Image 1 (spheres, rainbow, N blue to C red):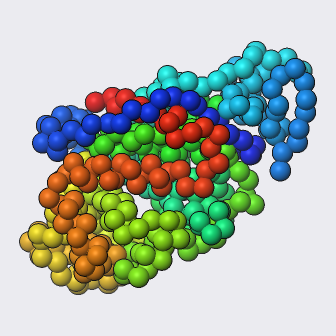
Image 2: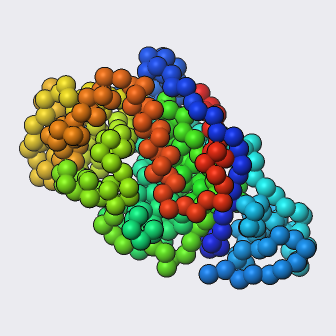
Image 3: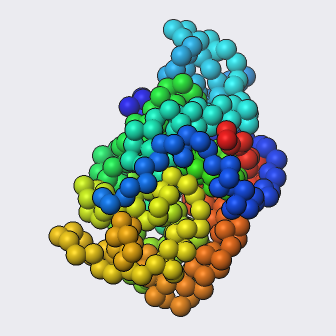
Length: 372
């Protein structure tokens, strides 16, 4: 792992936010990246100190070591770059711009294309899961948890059962952190989630920096993430703690269109859809249109599609069509991929920003350009 930045700091950016225009699902599928299409396998049977000087106020004393020197966070979201081996000398203030974050995005996207040896041909789904799990620990009553901190770097939180297998995602991003040492893990993980969604043909997700890395003392307790074996009351309790309503719960659940479960992690097994590296509304269509039975096996309770016996749904998935308030949103998203994309985009922005003490305003969100 790259060296851990422990400064409780903020790196902010001020860029104009432009609302995206969602493309039709037909156009997106036609434009799907050749890499993902070729690589996907479709057989799924299986407290700070202060110092004053002529430079801006410094927060914390820990530097981010990197090529050409070290970076110290400043209160205005900039970074002070010290010369390697110097004693107090500096190269000047480095303020990351949208172009700098685009370079980080592009490197992540390039690695997603090159590293096609994971699961169904892409690290994309597990990167999305990392961004979701580091953000979904937020508790609105105590204002603790959330993406601000990247405390999954430490054993207490990284070892939580819900986070099993996410070391693969963190390791995947380590070379990116090494090349861009100025970005916090907290910003990197959420930016990577945005990149993965967009590169898997999902909607453009507005994003802004400003998260600070924290130490092990800020790790959240176990049990804040959903348990797939439960039903609707559990979903409302878990997501309600974060501040989400029924519509937002169903929209976030659409991320199950990508990825798969593993018996050595959650205990469950299999993908939710036939195209687990492409973001679509297929998850909702499959919930409504397929016939689902309990799978006969030695593992935990899960559902299996009757036709191909290659897809799965969790009890929390089936709860979305068993509960009438949830189901009306499932119906909406199954009928219109663009409606799903719009709501998914908005709720993902909210999720990734839960509990973050941004110094920038929402208007500072930026849209980073997909490489496809």
